[in-house]
Length: 206
Image (cartoon, rainbow, N blue to C red; front, side, top):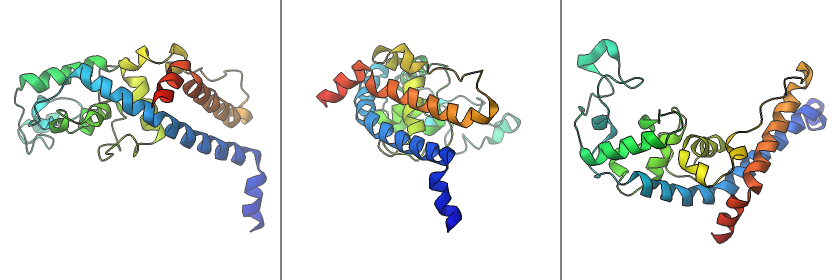
């Protein structure tokens, strides 16, 4: 029991507790802002036809979805074969154009919902793994929220460049202080997110 009590007096442990709380608070603070802005992104990329699953919109083979060694038996296209759809193909291309690196996480999204669900558009800007079952901004975590803001070029119009380019780690930081420096970088980034005036003005209206 004494060992467990000592955890709360350890500076490094306390730093991680503070970072965890800060991440949670910031995620909740950004949720409403992100929800509103994703509706604007949906307007920009347009609406799908409502009938096409994502498998129909991705040619075979396509990295990293298809197995190149099994072109005639692709697990990704097992239930749906690729088929052109001018409406949804246009939406897909717009999603790609809005992605900072041109490689959206299309496996995350349900393209048949592109007609009415802006969150399914937002999921294309999430990390590629672990988010396909997340059904809303509110259910996402801090990493997901920040990934959308960093990966989707639309957010360049409503966030400062400092928010979208967090400060690099201090190269002069001694090895034994790396943990502290990482925590410090987290807080600097959170402050930039929370206190940039464009975000505050949008949040105040919500």
